[in-house]
Length: 346
Ligand code: 5GP
Ligand code: MN
Image 1 (spheres, rainbow, N blue to C red):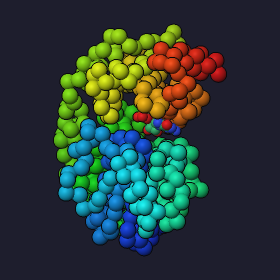
Image 2 (tube, protein in one colour):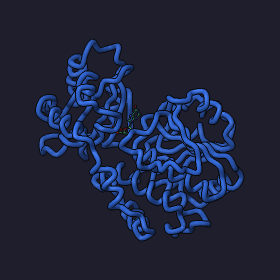
Image 3 (cartoon, helix red, strand yellow):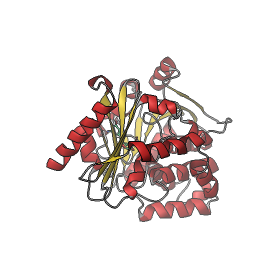
């Protein structure tokens, strides 16, 4: 049975009616879907006359700063900037809205969320949500994005009753943005419902040209140069058709690659016929961050869980490697080679 049944929508309705002070939060290193769904929800709460604070585990990347206007009717900050305030805000919330993650391990705010005693709502599209940690769970995995989940939840509320034009304009814009980034601009995870949502939001007046301009036509030159370097010097392809790139801290610094500026790189090798899966690993001060994408028939999710302490979706997953286990990036490459062998042996 779908979580988006009338019984759960009624619970959502009560949750929204009975509380006044909301805290909205999402996953670490928030991406377009995380920030789109979170800001969309905050604007909706504001329209309902509620107060709301958006607590992000990490600051938004510059590439998505267009989702913030500077005159928000809600406050927002990140745990990395204000750890104590994040804890206090979450612990004193009247109600918590958690978006675009399936478990508390996906957010640095996890322990605070666990400790909070207020009602908690989860709206998400990842496999296996931790239902025990939330009072209401609206989870759907056969869907494009958390933004589409939020869209469906809001559209089902009586005050909207399927009229997208009744959503706040910035909610509609943010939902279209997150759905666009999570589908890689309608390349993956597109369902009939996704196109219906896009169509309704366009009809409601969302300026999709503006969104496309802001997401895909605003990069800095360094990103393009780094892309050239990666494709020419770094990309390796295993006989099994796994493309892999390990980027060291020094290389990221050489190209001044900021958070969000490597977005999309992991998809590029999938354009080759012989490639079934692509992995990009970036060195961070405390860990190696792993991004995996695969074509239908190869499970990025399984590989992420098996070898990279992660998970995600069937064809788009991520994870982490402990940095202290590797002397340098070349050792990580060796690990990737063994992980490829392990995956194809299983
Ligand atoms: P990305 O490559 O864009 O960072 O992540 C792609 C997807 O992988 C995310 O939407 C998320 O579902 C999943 N993911 C990323 N990092 C992790 C992680 O550390 N653990 C788990 N379980 N999933 C992750
Ligand atoms: Mn998402």
